[in-house]
Image (cartoon, rainbow, N blue to C red; front, side, top):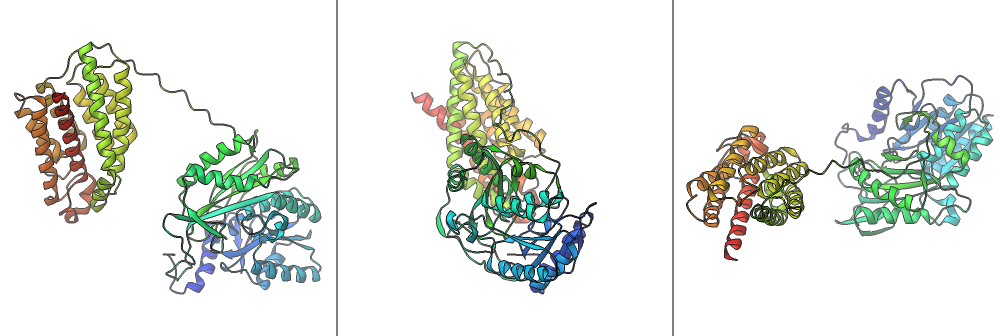
Length: 572
């Protein structure tokens, strides 16, 4: 729901309009019902006036600027502007060469813009209508003009704005717009509905784990629901629907828009975009000046839409033309179009120092243990995340799973290359830190690397060397992280582990680790009684009491895995 809203929700759109004009004063100036370009073109031109209901920002207010629209008229949320509002805005924008009214093809907009056009024409102001109709889910291709307008508004209206900016006459700009509209198709999906300002319930809901296909940007429910696929499958579905409508006279050049509907993160769009570009390149298409972001939204709707505009030479030049507006600002786009990504050269492989056969056995042992650790942390990922969320940010399980998985893979590769125990663990430590990220990942990487310095590539580790390795890891982690026992961090489990191992070096390795793991687990559980002073929970203060520390629990789990692995090896 909309959280920032005046007590009188009916004033939401008007107040937002005023705020927009203040925020973008160098580009636009406020009108009673919308905004218009602050800069007057040097020569009179066809005026492109766009508009629709509020709640779609950056459409349509954000389209106003050089190389785009001359003015925009804003209705209430999801409601067409009135006929009089459209007429007032159009009169203000008129420069003597006629007006084109651009909007999405929705009943209220069609009615009010059509009446406004009739009255403007009756006043002697030549006026044309451009109802963008790009939504493939709302009507078959044979009835293209009946389709709703969604994110195709951006490409169609931007192309028309560029044509008007070049000084072309009214009929020519209109013909270009009609051609762009015929060549534009979009399809959208929603994962959750949107909620009107002042309301507490969304206009529609989508079942958990499902998505609605074929939504409208006024909060219209999708035409069907299906399970949410992975990013690759979603990209395939969106692309397939649009590729099926490639015009018979279409070239291989396309303007592509991946549009967020208001609540989908840009990172989500970028993940999807990675797959979309691969699919479109597979069809040998040239992606010209693609746009990924929010261009026409639906308040807080979660979802996205994909748009293709099939370009010819004329449309491509206008799509590439420079533009300065709140929604889109760029110099003229040159170049051949988006090409395949070429990865940067990988870093040189770190040479594996020569090791004796005994040392290589130790390396293989390290790899087996790291693999077991990764499997255990993957199984515990959800639970560790749940525990972490009680007093932290909930990402600990994910970080530990990712870090240990990378470490296990790196360890196996290093062992296969003939690395000894010291080398294999050092390489695994770096991989853990690199993949896990964050404070926890860095500390685990540094601790494991410190542990490795007490091992050897020539012989297998003794109980004494293993104990020294854990002690070294503890000291490094405490120095770098600044935590000490009692601060409610992983140190509360690591310190008793190190202390126990140092006291038991006369016993066999497996028994020594078993005792150490028991001590680590015991103290990890005891962290629920502590108030956090360092680490992920420190900002929660007294609220952290009663919850164990996820970092201490994960370290204790790793200690248990090492103990089991050593015991299994001893029994073979």
